Length: 204
Length: 432
Image 1 (spheres, rainbow over the protein chains, first blue to last red):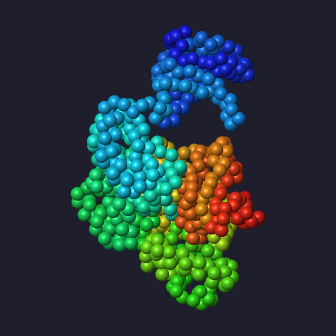
Image 2: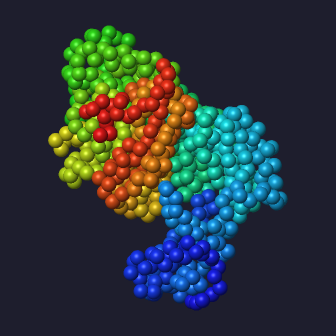
Image 3: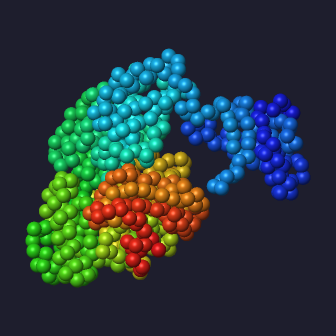
């Protein structure tokens, strides 16, 4: 166990106070620690879990630091994914909770499109995909290429189309993988519920 | 890699779930549909255009296709293509219900005839040409009775009549529905007649299963807690596990097993609808496919499988033994369309999603599009999904969440706010 390692995650004063408040509220005697776990590392919907644990719930591989008046415990994978992140506590009318800013799991579309892989994917979309879907009033936009995963958005007649998943798996994915074999998969990040003019609407 | 042919109607709700299942099973997919895919010219073998009405021609197309791209299984997601899937599977020697069995259940009158001929308990029924005089058709019918088009699904065109006058009105309304070009295309010859059945009282339930070599594997019994007493039969909430006593659940399973055997449904998915009255289960209909709409999202199985994966597993000859429904309760609500008009706004979605137990809310008609309620309507407004410890928890979550959803439909005569209770007067509101 790497006790008292250099903090890899920063806590705001509000977040620190809230953890201390939770410990006090639960009648903790000072031995409990805060475990942070990356529940889902998907950049589409990253999720984090916070839980107070007893000493016997720590693992031998856990990464631990204690600069905020309590121990923060993370499994090695979560520690790696959270390195350089910060934890805040937010309270609004609708919800309250810990909020993590994590540069390692930045939301899709927040990074600029650059690099040869993205350029080749863009070229395949321009040359093969968009001329085809345009026949149905649709278009496909490249949002980002990250870790060999291509993220796209469908628009126009494709957005909300009942056949969008077929177009994606039987058309777009096959074309892009043929043209750019090193890509691993295609993720559709379209808000299909927001489509106002789909080419086909599902029906019974 | 094995290849499976998935058949979808062009207006399918089911494509994403089946494609995800195929991906998880690592099988290659060809999608057959009555719709030419936009990118088909760049991806040979990935899609196939098939007609719905000309079954023999569609079967021949599939057989030719299979000589270039050998198929390990054919699965139809919706009623439209079950004939084609059965015919092509028979021609290629693949696992599927037989064409004769599919024919007998795709036509509601034929199904009643087959069951009655086998001595299976059946309600009074008869069939009359749609062009016949409804007054004549009403004479001799018991009341209350239910009038049904022979091959439409999801309660489309199904109307209860308590008097001869209501019978005539219902008849004329169904006649208009059957005149609709899309409806006629889907109905084929079955669009020429109307089935008249004695009304079956009781609570409605559905059974989802797969028949494996003649043995029914029951995957879920789904209660429909809202009274479905007509005049139209809009489905709203489905809950599983069933709250009926074990003895009644056994009766439901036994009724479906016996009717499937009589009808020859022996290898493939089935979705059955029944009425339960005083502990006795009566079959309303049985379809040679899995559940429709997005409802399958509530059915998950351990170890880690969706309903669609189980359907594909069976079609591919893989083992189904050992899969059981995940513990806990789940439910879905098919959101009713309150009135004909144009869908302008669906509010309160965040508030609905905030209800404990609610796992999802999908609106499946885009804003600005026309909406038509039953019995004419052929689209779901959307789906609300919930999970919980018990069916009571799930039902409560669905009802609370739905009460927070505000649907604004602009009738053709001008815009106004539509409240749900306004269209379901006290005592008739299916959601109370």
